Image 1 (spheres, rainbow, N blue to C red):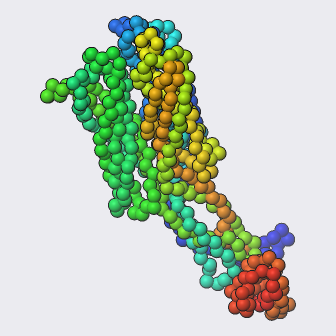
Image 2 (image 1 turned 120 degrees about the horizontal axis):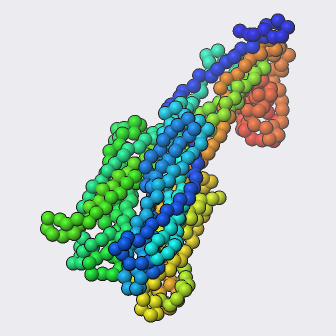
Image 3 (image 1 turned 180 degrees about the horizontal axis):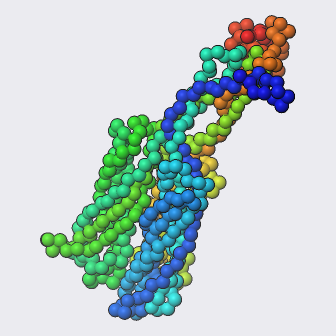
Length: 510
């Protein structure tokens, strides 16, 4: 039926909507990275000696909460820094631990109903400044990367009505890997590690832990996530003057309900929410490390889908106006791992008689224009020409080209490090392991329906039954649309019809 126009006449216009087959997916409707800076001060306990020189800093970020409101998403967390320093007298060391809360606020357009938010946190730099022999100031820079998902229906196929009204449509197919499950689960690990040494640690100086995912398998609608908790600590012994380094590893596995029964690929991002370490005495009289680790495991599963949409349409009986709708997809790729390597000779401010320790820390990670950039701070602990403890910081930059428009880092760590001192020069070799995936944005216009103008229908008797034309670069679709035909009819009447620059017979097709 039509609607009356301004003169009161009835417009003979017919609205036709195409039926569609839909599937549930998750759409990432918001993604943004933000950086904030925080600072904190800390004083030396009265029982400890003054600070002669800052030796090294090891930092960590913990995710505490993510709160959604009408204004957006508020992420809160805690930054910690373990600061190693040389005591006054230059013959021994001690440490301080600094904690600083932070928050990052994201102003989204408007959180969708049942929004699922995932957060990735990275320490982008930690600097320590000596205010006086009894006080230090620590400056942090942290980056938070937020992704918001909502569930929706996606049209994967369009169907024509039974009465075609002379309609012809053009379908286009594409294969896209789209999220079909987004979820998270809080996990807790408790482990005890024994120290394989006759000179056990007496006091912790610094401790760090991370969850490294090695494998995930889908069974039914549940994913089994397997990996390891990697722990690295520095501790002072009763007899030693320098901190000793210890590394531990413990396997972990979790069963997580994702609600999807198919999976092409899976991205798992653990974020540590709390870590607690304590030196304890075992029943055998040995020293051990008690660890309690809390984390949230964030998961995005994706499945390859074939999308078949109508991108153009026309009627051989009457004029047709097309109703377009824009569809935007964010296709994700499997996780990739690459190595960033650098070998560099760095100059010191004084002569190094012996290089004792190297403390690496990541900072200044960039991800722009198809290139990863990472700076590695090397805190060098050494003995100078006079045999006294000394320290210095040097930075090495690494870059790597990647072939994608938008890449997102999942995990980055120092895989190997070696350093050798020669006078005032230290020859360093660093290898980083970086895991990432890419997001490919695609946008297309699809035809949801047509409006047919029956009153202006074509006079069929006036249209030629057969037309002879030269196909100078025109597609069969455009020829069929122009001469009231169809691609199938043209192909039946002409051999090798798809060849360009030749004469073609175009039959009228009603």
